Amino acid sequence: MTENKINDSDIIAKFSVPETRNFAFNQLVRTYQQKVYWHIRKMVIDHDDADDLTQETFIKVWKALDNFKGDSQLFTWIYRIATNECLNHLAKKKRRFFIPIHNISEELSNKIDDSHLVSGEVIQLKLQKALLTLPDKQRLVFNMKYYDEMKYEEISEITGTSIGALKASYHLAVKKVEEHLKKSEY
Amino acid sequence: MKKENFNLDNLPKENIFKIPENYFHDLPMQIQAQTSGHSRVVPIISWSKRSTWGSVAACIAIAILGYFTLMPEQSSLGSESLADVRNQEIINYLIQQNLTQGDIAEQFNINKNIEIKDSELIENLKVSEKDILQSVDLEDIGEEI
Image 1 (cartoon, chains in turn green, yellow):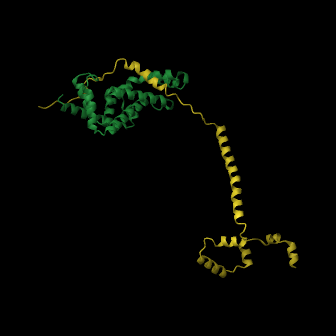
Image 2 (cartoon, chains in turn cyan, brown):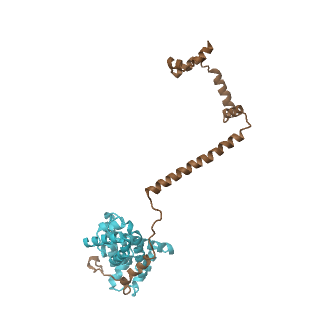
Image 3 (cartoon, one colour):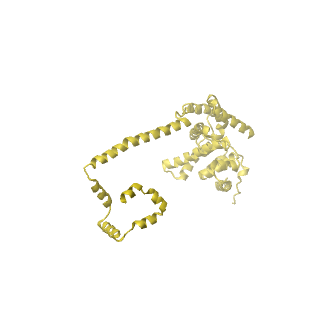
């Protein structure tokens, strides 16, 4: 974490100088692209959507990095932008086609069945499908806690939700997923 | 048959999603290709103390010029249109405007009942005798005598 902090401050310092701005931004993208991409990909499932949203996230970072106050870690600030991009994308998708929520889950679930997009054991596929039955925000919390192993404090900073509410949300998500897997005759 | 409880902790964490080959190698270049199109706009007008005071001074100058150019026009218009009207008629009009006949009659009755003596008026003004003597023109007294 300390090493990251030094790198982050270096990136921000170099970004503020016009001559080193592009170099600094390139460093930033290379440092965070995988975390951002996988965070988005787990939410939207489809690679093309995840690719678009990742690029959009970094373009927003480019535009707003001058205004970054350093109140939070650079990483959580970028994560917050990516999270908003994901949630807006999913909300737009629902509005655009007037599709009920369960159909969106079904649509994403079908993508999991596509062998071009995913590979893994059956149980892992079932877990992903079980996750799609959760509300978007609850799925987001689950992903950050379970896969990214983030602290509740960090998740709270990103989502703007209290730690207590996050704990409750994660606990419920785990119960629902386990119940779903149990029903699907694991 | 009773199913066993499923425990997520017993499941290995695996990433099942695939990505195109060299995706993370190419992504920074794709992003930078887009950001180079977003050239940063440097604001042409920047805040400075001098320009702010200059703007304030210009606004005040315009307001003063406007006042002196517009006001004479308004007054000349008034005097021209009222040139043919006698002063007494204007005074009568101003006194009676917005008053109903009832108001005028009432006011007339009130004034009729009130008699105010000069001595009472001076008392109400609370002016000392010394002050009164100083303000009286001695030549006028001479004329009276």
